[in-house]
Image (cartoon, rainbow, N blue to C red; front, side, top):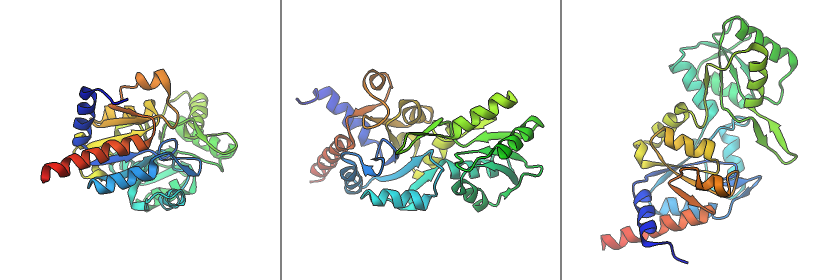
Length: 281
C-alpha cells in the first residue's frame, strides 16, 4: 500500500534538507554483533546521495577505534574518525567549559584515555572535578573516594544518563546506575549530565557535521534520547523500530519520520536521489 501523496511529499521535504545523518549504534545500526535490517543499504544510500554520516553514541566503555572495529565486523563501513562518543564530549567540556586541569575518574580505559588526550591530569588528590562514566572495574574504595570529594564541594558530572547497558547475558549497570549510587549517598545531583540527549552532545555533533542544525538528522531507536536530542538542538529526527521504542510510544515520540527499519529510510533517500538526478537532466 502506497503512502498518501501528502505524506510522501512531507518525507521528501524533510529529507531534502538533510546533508548529514547522525546514527545511533545499539538498536539502530547493530543489535548485538549483527547489523540491523537495511543498515548496509543505508550506508550505501548515504554515499550515493552525496550526504555524510556521523555515528553518535553514549557508550564510552570502548575506544573509537574499538567501536569502529566492531561496526566493520558487522559489515558496516565505519572508521574511528566517523564516530563521536560521550567520552570525547566530556573531555572537550571539561577543558573548554569548566577549564579543568585535573579530574578524578570513575570510568573505563577509553574514557580515561580521552581525558588524557585533552591534556587533563587524572588524580584522586584534590581534583578540580569528579567524572563518572561506565566502569567495569569500579570498587567500593573508588566509589567512596568520589563521594567524599563531592561532599567536600567538588563539582561532578556524568558522561551520560543511561542506567543500563544491554549485554549478551543481560543488562549491565551503566553510568546512570553509578551516578544514582553517588546521588543517594551524597544527596547531590551531578552538576552536568552529558551524552544524549544533552545540548552539549547535540552541539558537538552539529559542529563535527560541518552543517547547520536544520541540515542534520538524528537517526535512532530511543525517543527519550535520540529524538529528544534532535528536538533540543534544532535537528530533524528519524525513529527506527528495531530497538527500544515500539507501538504507541513511537507514535507519541514526535519524530519527524518513523520507519520499521533502516531499509525503509534507505529507500526514501534513494528515491530522493533519483528524483534529484532526473531534475538535472
